[in-house]
Image (tube, rainbow, N blue to C red; front, side, top):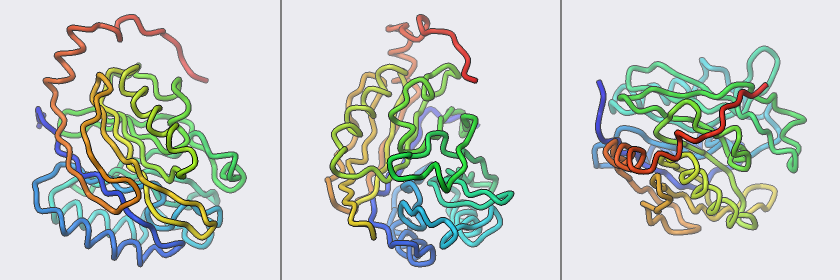
Length: 260
């Protein structure tokens, strides 16, 4: 059933280092505290562990405890929920975004651009394909953190409505996060949402959030405080997308290409 509006809860949170159970417990409290009706809840990248390069300590399967937890939330609250976690499959580790529908069905995306500066490419296998999720008539392109720096990968050739990034993006480079989220919205004429964590990790990396949502013109729709845990709900409308795509037909002039 197609919806003209999509209400999305952005959860900006601290993460407990390599402690899936602890993270599920603290996230459950934040999710339970949402009193408004929402269609989708967005958690950060590696929300069960923080950005660890020790996947063996926290890796789960697609039948593991966290997926069961997410499915229970989705089905009992009648809401979709998404974020990334460490998944092991076929003797490989993946930084995998999971999108759990209210029905309990799951779609996935494996991070394409592993973060070489931190050695992510040495321990995690890179994804090879984009995932466009169809939810309530909205097309959502789900990407992860470092993918934000690669506009070709994010290019709106599938006519999606929402570009969604989950991240552990550190404070020293947060200006790039701000600028690129806005740019991705403008160049793809789509809503662009980024959900980042806050706090310190075990490697003394500091994260100050700056989670945000932008409309197709690059206007910021949210007012989430920096460096603080916060949950904000943003409402997206199909009317906004249609109005400006019909008025400003920039996507008609996009380059046609394929990635190999």
